[in-house]
Amino acid sequence: MILSHARLPIPPLRHEFKEGKTYLFLIFYYISRESQILGVVLKTSWRKLMKDEYYRDYLDIVRSFRQYLEKRKEKGVKAVSSENEDSQELLEKLFHSIQRCRKCPLYKFRTNPVLGRGNPKARIMLIGEAPGREEDLQGKPFVGAAGRLLGEDLRKAEIPEEDIYIANVLKCRPPRNRDPSPEEIKACFPFLLEQIRIVNPRVICTLGKFATQTLLNTKQSILRLRGKVLSYQGKIPLIPTFHPAACIYRPDWRKFFLQDLCLVREQLSRRKGT
Ligand code: SF4
Image (tube, rainbow, N blue to C red; front, side, top):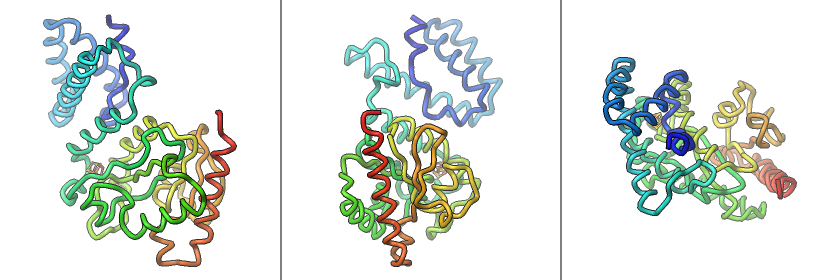
């Protein structure tokens, strides 16, 4: 019984907890599902171990897990593994966590949090910086002028829409579209990591300085990095390019932007069948 629970995916908010506590939490959770009495004892000890704010998150995760398992049960699914799990459903769960998120002050300014759009099993993942005004209003990334430019150049590079999933490093809009702070990036980054894990793309293309520096953990400038085939965690080819909004202000960069998108397409065809 416990074995089948142990195959459950790690909850999306696991990064909110200190690493050691995360696994402790999972063990408590799985055991508490098995025994009501033991569960009460363990939950009480767990509460003592955690600060109140984390405990609230813990309860949210448990609640969403429970709802999720009940839904799966209704569908006749006894045990689930992250491999078989539906990416769309996982992204929806992640979105619910983001809607509740208050890990940085940006939650105060958002109209809508913005998770991503496109095919949840896309082979290419494009990653930008943060939602702008239009994105914040519509709750979708890249829907303003930069999004139109990106769409045009993806067509020119012959990258079909069904191959694309688009996300940002930050899920809430910084006021007046200012640059994200390092603290905000640090707070929000776990959501992006989880998104990449769920979509599991074959190629990543970072759009602009912030996405590139965050994913590559470097301070090097985008001018040095763009147009190269680098690597995300030694596993997925990562190609940095300019943010499409930058190409609006610097039209002379647009040809490089298109070149980089063509490089993305090329990498994808190389990785076909991998
Ligand atoms: S930007 Fe990210 S970390 Fe900050 S409140 Fe929004 S979802 Fe949470």
